[in-house]
Image (cartoon, rainbow, N blue to C red):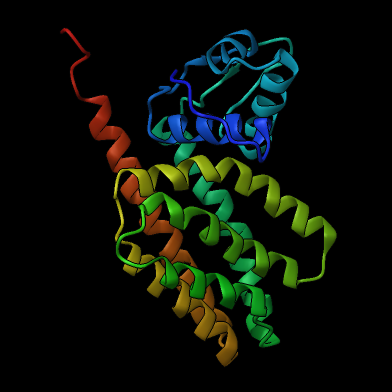
Length: 226
């Protein structure tokens, strides 16, 4: 775990941001414990500050914590990944079908597509994760159901780690991801529920296949020093 220069904006924000980058870049590997005392020492901050930063990452799905246990970087396998993507597909297909039936496409979702386009060719792939998540969150909110919004938000917290890995390892071209979002949007605006569901399913499935293949290939590599 490396330290980082912390800005005055918020010490908690800065610690959280640095830990997030190290997790996504795999400087802190899957399965590793992220302890409050160690974080406090490395960043030279108070333990409550370290705890707050860690809890934010737990809430966002980038760390997990069992009762009375240290937070850890998720160690997902291919089955975990497939189950997450299956759950997401089932939930989001229903969302886009309903929205397309009423031709209700939220302006906020269109804004996320514009945001991804504005990142440009020099942007880091990981920068596309936040607007990607927000696109789908905006669709869920458009239904006007608080329960559906909570369900989707909870699932996407777990999905965030998977989506970040897809981008961090350059498993899908960002131009293709943008195009897939546009096709989902076009189908909703056109009032084509089955087309919207099919485009959503293809979008999610391509990411699942790419990430599962990556994890399976990585599992076949010899251990360091072997």
